[in-house]
Image (cartoon, rainbow, N blue to C red; front, side):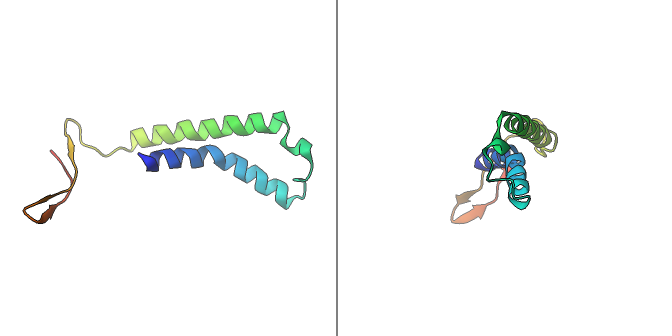
Length: 86
């Protein structure tokens, strides 16, 4: 679950990181108007679009068999039994 949350957070923050990198490389990052409402709104929309597409990709690429329940790995009689679908 933590992996999914961190992945979605990364996808949301990716446009902001790219924009900040572009501002830094173009030497425009010192100007406060560079982070005005216009760019931030577009960056937020781009981050939301990436996050939604990430959720769709996770749902479509889920490899769990239908009608089966996952059993996590466990120790039985001192032997590790790997996780499986039953």
